[in-house]
Every structure is written in structure tokens, then in C-alpha cells.
Length: 147
Image (cartoon, rainbow, N blue to C red; front, top):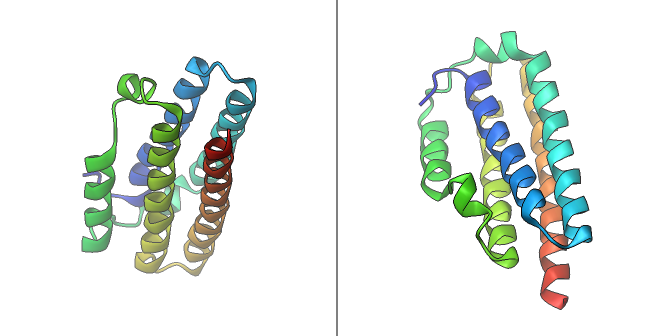
């Protein structure tokens, strides 16, 4: 496990971006492809925010038991990108929804271990943004069930 919050968050965010990008490349449905590209773009924007605060986040340890446990859970459910693109649409969306919820919890737990008020605010805003991503994924999941 990586030792600082910046490395940890960057690693997790990179996986999410790649997961949206790779599945969108294999999607035949234009609506789904646009949705996934939008989700990837939002994750990229979060990564830019994380990168802007790399120095401060690097100074925070990610060694808290709650963070280590979450990263272990994320690692346990993560699927190789090649396998991910082979999942049926509903299984893929279900998987991404689960990852989004873990990511939200990760931001929340990272906020709890930070000492800096500025970093707490940053992580809280990332947490709120991730809650929006989860809502978008839930909406898309419900839409797909109707199709």
C-alpha cells in the first residue's frame, strides 16, 4: 500500500478514469459511450484537483487502519481492465457503482485523518463530488434496467 494520500488517491482515480475510458471504447451504444466519456472527464477533473494539491496530500500519511481497510476492499473488488470490458453492461455499471461508493468512503476517511483545515475542505469537496458521481451511476443503472 502506498504511504501518502496523494499517491493513494491518484492511483484510485487513475483506475476509475481507465475503467470508464476502456468500457466506453468497447460500448456500441452511443448514449452509454457519451455517459462514460462524461464520467471519465469528471474523474479527470478530480485528478487535476488532486494534482494541484499534491504537495499537501503527499505530506499526509495514508496509514490509518480505516484507509488501509478500504484500499484492501477496493483492491479485492477491482477487475483488470481487459476483464472489465468483457462484463455485460449491467454488471459493469453495478461494479462501477460499487467502486464509486468505496471511493466516496475513501475521500471521507482521508478527510478524517488530515490535520490541515484546507485539506479537510478539499477532501470534503471531493467526497461531495463523488456522491454526485454515484447518483449519476445510479440513474444510469436504473435507465439501463428499463431498456
